[in-house]
Picture 1 (tube, rainbow, N blue to C red):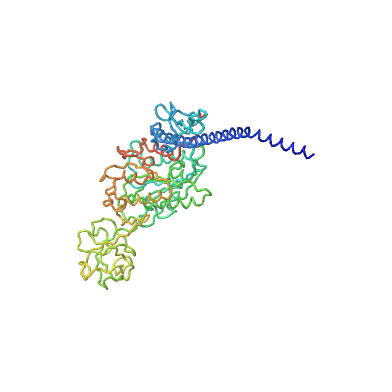
Picture 2 (picture 1 turned 30 degrees about the vertical axis):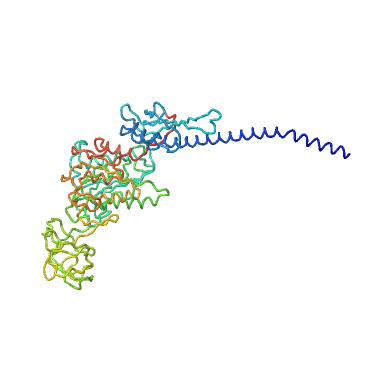
Length: 565
């Protein structure tokens, strides 16, 4: 038995020794297969990554092309934003060679979207396709004779138009006297043509998802007065227009509303329909009453406030939009703008304790129209706390920088009497101590952290208000209606003679409207009704046509299936 067991063990040992070489061969073959498989995975995994990056760049290229279809530069734009080396969406360090497939970018008129997105240009197009390919070199799989992998991707985009995302839109409409001027391109007054353009916008937007409000400037004294513009049979009387110093009401439809149209037809019962002249009323709606000059900074700030408050009530806040329609030339109104009119008065300041606040200022001859201090013909407002005191040009009077009125101590409210001021004046300053001197008290307007003296740099105030709204995420569109490129014209910025806020001096109405637009190239429009088109603006003819183009700008190009006809 022991002999048989020993013989069996010896046999097993001889067998194992004989199989050692076979096992080594199998192991080498298995290892080679594993390395090859891992190399295949790595090479094709890298090709997949390149394909994903190529898809992103192709999508971006197609969307860029679709964005500029209305400008006629769709092919050039698509090429600029392609993934080719040196273009905007090239992928560095990928090792792949990217090229545009022959025949692309390719444009066509999509019959699927032609109703919502008109085909434009010659030949007429509303869609663009971009196809790119990348040759990706391999490393591990070269041992199998595969030195590279070629991937191709295709993207199709449709131009702006149709229904975009939900919007909260506030339209700011100039109703100053200049809006009664004739617009030869439209064949009516500027105000009438502006309302016709707004009506086009109402029909283009989506009444199910978009909300629209309407503000006008100059404003009125109360919301009850503003309701006259949205009530059939009523006309807002000129007596309801109030000065900008009286905290005017700008909102005709202050809280944006929807359901203003159905199937492209404006609903006559909507307050927007009545305000824009679509309510079927014998009289009623917005008119250019005038009565005050053009000043829009407060209206822009108020529109932003209303939009932010309204968006906060929405479960998913929509995109806020402000559309400003004006000739662009902010100028001194006939009475007291923007808060309290600049006040020229004769005064002297008692010495008091040098360097200590609390100096007493005695005022006489205060607050009369056309005072000789700065030659202004504005009706002057009352003196008040926080007004800044300045010496007048051509006067020997000087006032320490930053001196403000603290409070009135005696005398007629806001007029003659004694006032406490914030800074004691230097001893020996002429025009103060025991002498009469002409001093100006000017209110300060603060917009987004920038302070302006009232009645100065009013176009820059508008720019500051618009840029503050844009910084908060609101889209700002401006329509320069009868504006001028030159300074010194009838619609220019006559109060902007310094470079206080934005390094800009002597702004024209055109440059002001351009600087207020959140994206000057696509968001700035000019009608050219005065025979002059603002440099750099989009111009498409009369105002209704221009509003139709603006409605397209409120939508975005979008990707569509590649088999879209």
